[in-house]
Length: 426
Image (tube, rainbow, N blue to C red):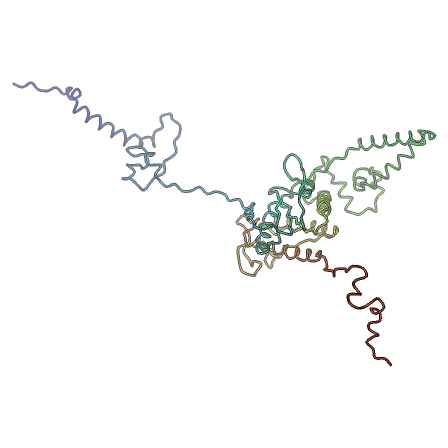
């Protein structure tokens, strides 16, 4: 008679044991990821896996299936990340086969970069004209760069003009100058020490004069020289409160400036003292460019997106226009080309040929290629006019002395009476 098998023998035989292990594995693989959504066993919170349409209901390569969610991840297409495009930099210049006879030097910030790009497009069919880009994308008259030298654009322009030989200079900047400005500190102790040294030197050169007599005589001269050299310092810092009270007939612009003077020397954009300091920087920049002896053009800023930003551009353009008029250089007004009839910012509009195009970039500040070409159109015609005025007048070649009139068969007397010789004799 056969002996019945024990139930515990199922766990000792190889066949049933393997089948039981497979069943447990499948159960853990299915129930484990699902239970993790409802129970957290002390581990860190996990991000939900993105679902995929591929695979058998997510079993193969799907979110948390039998073989995990990362098995087929390298083969799945992920949505591309949106990269913020930088419109401040214009396309680089193309290489030219010929060397141009005349060059236009363009200085400034990112606006000048786009202007130079438009001028290169305008001069593409004129091999005798070239464009030299010497811009710094993020810069301004107030600060050329965060640290180091040169500190401002006037100093940078001196270094650039020392190595370049342009036939015309174009500048366009100011977009980054809507910031506060610190007034440079003038150390009066140094000025007094220099005056004392000069007084001692005068006393040594005049041994017969008494020190008491020389000292009062030298002091007014030094004060007069200081007043002639820096009249604005005298109006701002040298007047005492009593002198200011007596100066009641002064222009009204001076009185608010004194009352609103910043104790730390920092002035905000659009303040009266800020305008004075900024105007000095404009004049200094113009003086550096005029020293080269070639035509100088200052290009105004266009409207940008936003009511406040547009008003800021108009404010800065008024300063550039006034300074250019006083210095006798050409101011190029481009405002009407980038606003509508109501004076508002224009994203799309007619290009320089009158065709409707997208003129400004998506950021509402910089340009597209048609916009840069239209910007350059305003500047190109002024450059052409100025260079044509400087072109030397062709003169007849001079003949050697004593041979010119003989070769023509006349002499000096005949030349003076040539009209009378044709008259019939009476």
